[in-house]
Length: 212
Image (cartoon, rainbow, N blue to C red; front, side):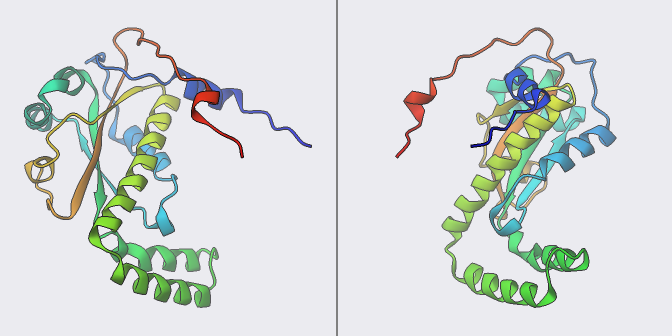
């Protein structure tokens, strides 16, 4: 039997991540660093590697003002954070499948004949899948990338808070996005905590896991 040792750095990242609702408003994350955080987040897995997530980084006074009206119960996060990232799932994500797999071929990750067969199989599959099933799939993928985004932000020294309390029926249109195409997943506030966040407890593993 072999044993592996969890990286102390990774353990520090996951154990120091706490939801923060009030940030230091003087701390601003540069576009370059935010891009790096998003790039790291998109290393998350997704169904057949469709990468259906789409991000709207809201950091301007005008954008935050619009969002405050859509998330009245979360105004402190919106107003004090460096940015709020609205995570969406793209119902047209399969449109990018050929480009993604062609890039894999160019980089030597996949032979052309495998790409052609996989693309044919997935074209058939996604041509038949009900819209609701596809929506559920991209929501799961959106959850995966959201968690990775929060851990990436923590690794950069920032704090976050996932937010579900906002008007999902209006957010896409409010920011000029196609309502039927872009499915809201969550908002994530990002910034530097103004004070030490409140720690929270977790249920013991023997209450939430079973071995068979």
